[in-house]
Length: 554
Image (cartoon, rainbow, N blue to C red; front, top):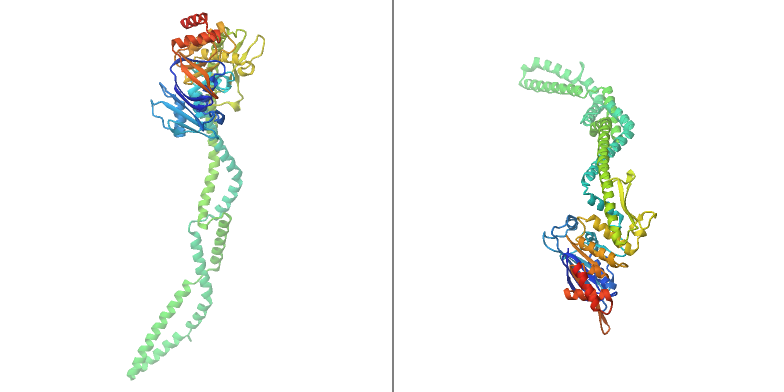
C-alpha cells in the first residue's frame, strides 16, 4: 500500500509530505483547492507524461516520491524488476521517484536505481488503481475484464495456457518437418538424376591421384618406346656390339697366354663384356617397366576426365564425390522417412489440439457459470446506488480460431444498459461520469477483487448524488477498504464520515503567491470539515450536530 507521498514544487504545492495508512482515507476540500494536483503528482511518479507545466512557477524542477509497503511482494513486480535489472531486497519498501524539469525532460528512479517512464507505467497497475470521472483504464478497459472474471471464478487458467503452448509447439514442429519434406520433394528428381550419374561412375576416395599417377607413367612409357626400340635393335642380333665383344674375347682368350699384356687385355675385355651384359639387362628391364597398353591409357584418361567433369558440376573436389553420393542417398532416404515422420507429427498436433479444446471448453463453462453469479451480484448493488433501472451483463463471445490463445477461446466484456429496453453497450460508451463511477464501485464490491492493485483511488465517485445514495457509496467504500487501502476524493459528507483517516486540501494566498496544502484532521477537525460540507461557507451548530451523527453512524 501507499505509505508516504512527498511532493516538491508541483503546480501550487511548494512542499508536501503525506503519510497514509490502511483502510479508507478520504480527501476533501473546496472546489479548486487542488485535489486534482495530488492525483497529477501521483500520476507523474507512476509514469504518466512529464509535462513541464507541472513545475511550480519560479522553480527549476518538480519532484514526487512515493513509498509503498507490501505484506507480500507482488509476483508481477518481481518479474518486471528482474527483466529490467532493478534490485529490490525482499521486505524493503518500494520507493519511486520522478523528477521533471521546467525546460522539459524527466528522470525516474526505483529504490535509487534509474528507471524509465515506461517501467514506471508498467508497474503502476500493480501499485495504484485509479477510478475517476474519465477513467479509461482498470475496470472500464475490456482488456482486463477476462482476467477479472477468471479471478471471480477462481479459475485455474494455467492448464489452458500449458495446453496452448503444447499445441503451438506441436504445430511448429509439424510445419518445420512439412517444409523440409516439401523442399526435399521439390529437389527429388534432380537428386535422383545426380545420384544416377555418380552411381554410374561410383567414384572412390583417392582414385584421382591413382589414375593421374598411372596415366603419367603410361605417357612416359609412350614417349620412350621409340628410343628403347632402337636400342633393342642395336643390342640384339649377331652384329651387336655385345656379340662382337664376346667374339673378340674368345679369340683373345686363345692367344693371351703368349704375352702378359694380352692377358691383361683379356681381363679388361672380360670386364667390359660383363658391364655390357649388365647394361643389356637394365635396358630389357626398363623396356618391360615402361611397357604400356594404349587401351589402358585411354581408359584411365577417360575415367579421369569424367570424374573431374562431375566434380566441376557439383562444385567440389573429386575426392569429395563419394561423400556427395552418401549425402544424396541420405536426402532421398529422408524424404521417405520424413513422410513417415509427418504422419506421427500430424497425430501429435491433432492430439494437442484436442487437449487444448477440451481445457478451453472447461474454462469457458466455468466462465459462463461465474458470469451469471457476477451479473447477479453487481445488479444487487445497483439499486442502492440509484442505478435501479440499469442492467449489467458479462458478455462472453466465442472467438474465431485464429484469435484463440493461451487465455482461451472467448472474449469477455462487461456491458450495461442504463434504461429499460435499451441495448447493452460498453461501460464507458453510455454511462455518464457519475454513473460510471458508481458502476465501477458496484463491480468492485461484487468482485471483492483479489490480487488487484495495492492502493485503490476513487476520484469524486459521489459527484451528483447525495442522501441515501451517498451513504450507500460511503458504506461500500468502507467495506472495500477493510482488508486494504482505499483513498477517495469526495464532496459528500456521508462518504467523508466513513473515512478512517481524513485529509483536508486547502488553497491559500499570500500576496501574489498561491499555495495548496494538505492536513491530516483530528476528530475535531473532521467534525468541522464535515459540518462545512453539510452547510456551506457558514458552519452552523445544526451542521455540527449533523456531522456528529454522521460520524457516530459511520
